[in-house]
Length: 586
Image 1 (spheres, one colour):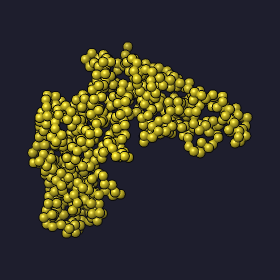
Image 2 (cartoon, helix red, strand yellow; image 1 turned 45 degrees about the vertical axis):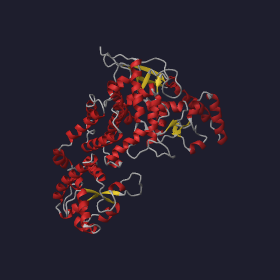
Image 3 (tube, one colour; image 1 turned 180 degrees about the vertical axis):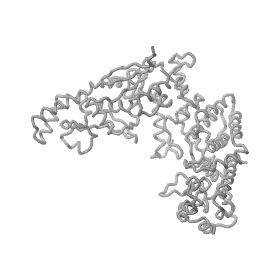
Image 4 (cartoon, helix red, strand yellow; image 1 turned 120 degrees about the vertical axis):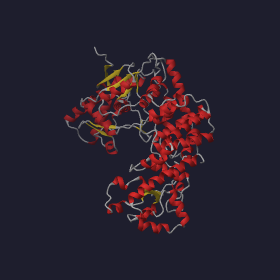
């Protein structure tokens, strides 16, 4: 007989709400952002009222039954026996309305989910100001399930308010009490849950989720770890989410804040950094098993093992969320020339670089100056080559493995420098990179590394006295960007030459950063028409240096377009190399 990995358990709505309230079922804290539209909550109650099914719930046995302070709505009486894998938004909706508990919306504002009901039309709606003034409606059905509410008394009060507005027919007098009573009795609505055994691993649970919920977004390991944090270290998850929330908004008062111009982090992103720092892992599946307290050798669960692993995570998260560390790391990006978030093509590159920076600082005690210089070169290399874009976890696992035998600061630097030299070879600079620059990708790593090199080389904006770095200052905000990407050979001009292929027109080598006013002035004119006018602003010496830094041949505007692209690709690669070498002072 085939081994069944789950059991089917039938609940009533009332029983589910009770189990959530006492902590038998681990519904994550209702003070986390609730993302369902109110209309979906309305439709959920409408479906139940009409006797329609609202889908299975999927729970996962925790495997621990000891007394423990845990997640959720209030101070719980027990550790959750069941973790919610599928159904969290439905259960949060039901709990918030049935229990009248306020939720936090996706803007982190506290509010109630108010669903209205029209007894005569037997219709649900999201409460609004017009409904609140209309005696025909129950403006907030949460009132029906309050402990102090008497159904008999509530019905009489509703009828009295309605009679004060208009006369009721005998049919209406009979229908209203029956309909409201039917609504109250939704507490007896049946729901079915599939409870997956605690012995099932997270990969199998994720597969079960996908198979029973075709509309669901596939679960990932970070989802599982964040759920475990809710159960066994809820304050840590709250701290993580609070940090991410504060990073998105400039502080209203002067003081320390995670707000920055590079990254609007999510909890799962920073979790990856903590895992890299604490466990020297990029793949999360093994870490999840460890945090569950599972011995990877014998498959048994141990409370001691779980506590030890959570201690590692707690220490790592404290370092990751340390504001001094956080902002000190961003200096690495500036030192690498990536002074704007526009240059960051891979957030994973940024996150893993932060993890390596923390490892160098905390575990290998690399001095701040040396660490910044080494990590700036590493970040430049990783960004340019897309090191963490294909299979980021696998690549980072390999990089972390290289550090296993390292003993001190010199070893740490040596490992990273050898990798940089192995990747950025002479052939890479002279052959591979020019070929890679032959692309029309909207977010080319080569193009953004070229812009970073311009910042490192203190280059002026093309046909301007202003510096690229100055006009890319993220603290400057205007209706128009100070700099814009401009087609050196304008699109319409090329189309007039019968070059209509967008892949050819939008080549990386056909773009330059110019001031927005110059971009408007250039319009779709031929380079031979607009370039001589712009060149009048500068001396021959200024033009030569400007063209060199912007990888433009002298009299480039008179070249045939295909020849121009080939030549500029080679020159861009040379400038990128020069910018990179400026980091290490060569």
